[in-house]
Length: 355
Image (cartoon, rainbow, N blue to C red; front, side, top):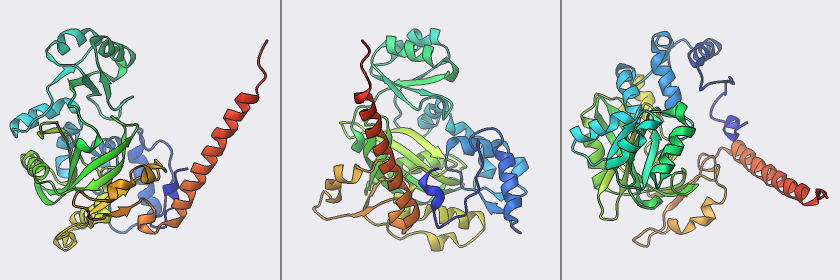
């Protein structure tokens, strides 16, 4: 089990297959188990769960509250990578030159006007892969053949730059109006390049805030949103993707910096005093995902010293919330995994060599 199931802040209801078709039935069962007298607020944490909730909302709306219930179709549309270019063009925001590849046979003609290297993304979220970088037509055709079940793909020109060139503007929306804007930057990922971020820092960057407000302002969206940008060598920001209808994986940086996004969402869903939960300012922090990468703190400890020479607050999962049991469980898993790895290597080394 994941260490998070041991949290002291929640009661965990176990179900198998939460990312599959029966999610709506599971949610109905959980509501009955809890026996709440009022509707409960849903906080989706992945595109797949958001999609399942949106498609089953008619069945769930009698028991649950969802801050973006009125714009479910728009959330589903924005989840698809092949819809993004049109929204960026409408808001006059730079987006990498892209084409849609529907079949393997289309690769050569579709990519003929693009400059390599390219990045390949399934149009539908949470397919067999998230994104792959290719340097030639042959690589693109090979991916299309190997992942034919995940077509269509969005194929776009790669914007070069290391992890620190990736920015995010996290916000909470009330019908397209940002209630607060929080900017951050990715410092490390595992694996580097296209992997999941493991170290993030708060940054004070006006341009991502302005671009995110412009992009989101054209949309009748409510709920949490995070717009990701990449800054090229010339300093230009390119919109990579929006995450809507759910919180991002690294939302904990915003929470521990003073922007408690889930609490804001809860108040909005229950018609509470949202304005009282909005921060007037946020802290200057670096978030280290020591749950996913135990060594990321030591490898990136220099990030705690800001560009102006000041020291910034380090924040961590579990430890940052004084949640000791999942912290202990994560290190037990890390230790047992390391011991098991050593045992496998020793076993292979001692295995008799066949004559």
